[in-house]
Image 1 (cartoon, one colour):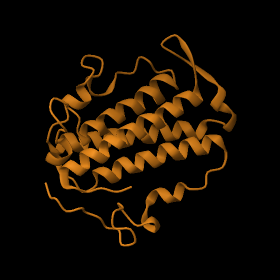
Image 2: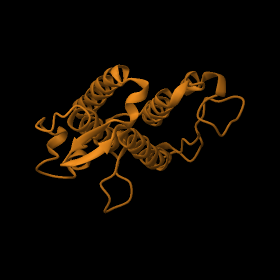
Image 3: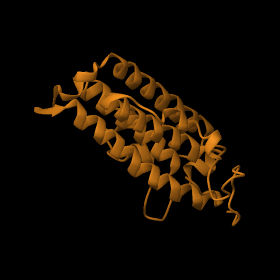
Length: 191
């Protein structure tokens, strides 16, 4: 691990990137509740990608502090499974859809299977991007007044709004983990 702080920022050297170059800034002016929630979710998705940028398979799979199995690669796999679970299985009622990364047999397979293999990393990113794309396609069809609608999930009625807020919470929590994991890999810190 390098002890230097890596940054491409020139305005604020402790930031990940300069504010004018931050891809999340394009999401700064949402209109309405649906767009606001969706933009927060997109913001955290982009942040996850930023936190993993430029890492090789070994760095992506590097575990945090034993006995934890948490790694950046595990987070990508986990968040792909979360996207599928909430957007396809819950919101679209596809509860029979096989869970990603063997989640039905081993609750921690998304982390346990996060090994330092370029093919595993490529599969994780492809799966995550496919799930994000599918979720965004569904979001595009959701009317602005659809946030108060409910879906039946495991026998309970759950408002769509609650699921979207949960997704934002899930990403926010894990992007916080990604901050620490990335700093352990190469010292890179920032927004």
